[in-house]
Length: 88
Image (cartoon, rainbow, N blue to C red):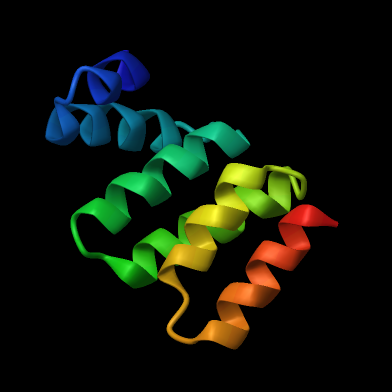
């Protein structure tokens, strides 16, 4: 339901659903990626980074998480490192 809400543009409701799933102990890279994307969208850089890094811990090859993390990087060197890790 959370992903459908997110795709439909109901971001606050989507985040609420995804957070509830996360609170129940779900550990999925896609869930962490979506929570990171939502956090970034509301301007919560530290929260976004935390979720994106959790996504990568669960699935190091998740390219979308590498790209999203690179977009949040405060400097070019960090962005390049995030992108390089996703391409490896």
